Image (cartoon, rainbow, N blue to C red; front, side, top):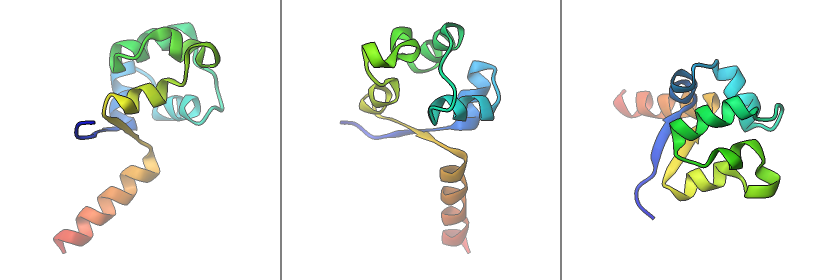
Length: 90
């Protein structure tokens, strides 16, 4: 597999026109993904909308996205990376 491409939640939210909280709730499984949101995720990630809307039938879309070399960074992960970068500079 090629190099991972880190995608911050803020960027995915901006591309989809939704809040970070809305994206996180889908990611965490708190909320399901509507068909409208599935279309937006497909445009943003290249993962088929059917996976986003019906993962139990078509497979976990987050896994498919990772196989394409992407990593989704939650807010916690973004904060950890920022802290490490700041510590390295200091």
